[in-house]
Length: 101
Image 1 (cartoon, rainbow, N blue to C red):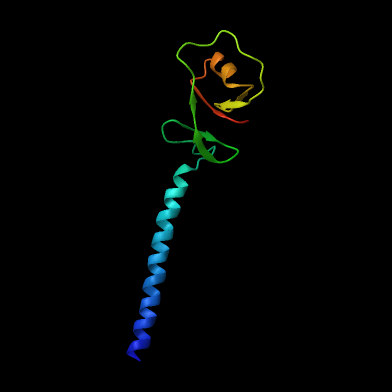
Image 2 (spheres, rainbow, N blue to C red):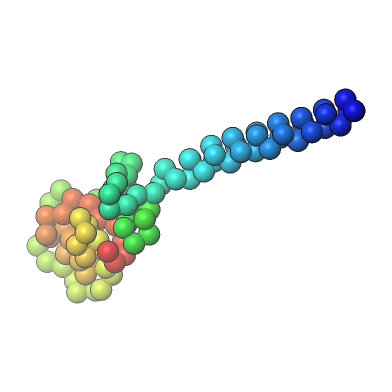
């Protein structure tokens, strides 16, 4: 009888610990999420609303480019899509992420 009780208690404690560990891991994974309502991301990241995730940001050089090549490699900044990073930087954007908005 006591052995059965201890086995049951062990199972309950094990499940409880698994729930705690799963919750902790889940909270770590969700730190990289964002949305239109909560677009906050860590430094050097921007919110990609399509993926609902914070993605690495690329920074524009301090000196704005004067000419750009017309290679189509879309980037996004502040919800606006540019044909490539050079055109984004030319438009006074400070950072962007690769891919369409």
